[in-house]
Image 1 (tube, rainbow, N blue to C red):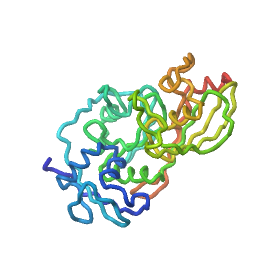
Image 2 (cartoon, rainbow, N blue to C red):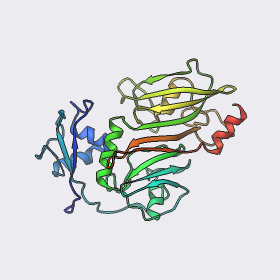
Image 3 (cartoon, rainbow, N blue to C red):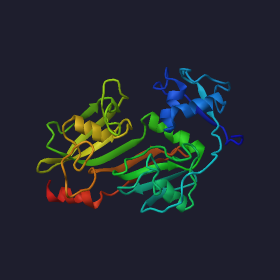
Image 4 (cartoon, one colour):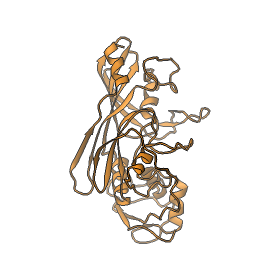
Length: 304
């Protein structure tokens, strides 16, 4: 780990960072395990205001965090193509329309085909942040959720985009179909989420979980179902799915959080249709849309 990339500097200019541990912030921001961040701090790849820093340091306003990402010792991602559509690409980012049933990056199952493997197949290089299994991955959507995501091609862009996600300045909107007709046509669900104590692959609303905030608006009533527009203020794992289960309106087809069998769709009826963010290099506002897939359209056309 002798060769390192150019230094990336992040200014703590948002009050939401203040008082939080530096290892916690960088772990949540980059989606890297906290122990890896702690190792980077120990090995002096991460510094504060030009000096070494302790892993439990609590950030202050206007602190400058500098990061040098070590070179990846091995690349575990195979180059395998997948049915993705590239909506936009420049020297810094690549925006992808992901189909359902495809993971963003290999997980515990060590999937050989993913969004990342498809980009590698197409000779698109991604940032080393998150490597060896999550290069360039700034945010994710579930395997069975379709829609638009952005990945970083450079380490600097990875941190700058991740900072926007962490500060909740990126606009992410989803369309989903839920069971039942909701009493309130719109509202905000502000309930923390944690991993389920028993069913470890599931998440649930929990008092001591991580903050999670979802805005919803019913855009069409169906027979025993609602088509709902969701806006995420946070990006917790399974957030919309967990919040809708909590509201007793689980997503149609969600076999994890609702056991009812649905023949018309083989996954949760959830689609990431809109993504808006500010390009960190030229400050232009980037907007991307993804069309509703056929399986969700069919349920809507059927009227529920």
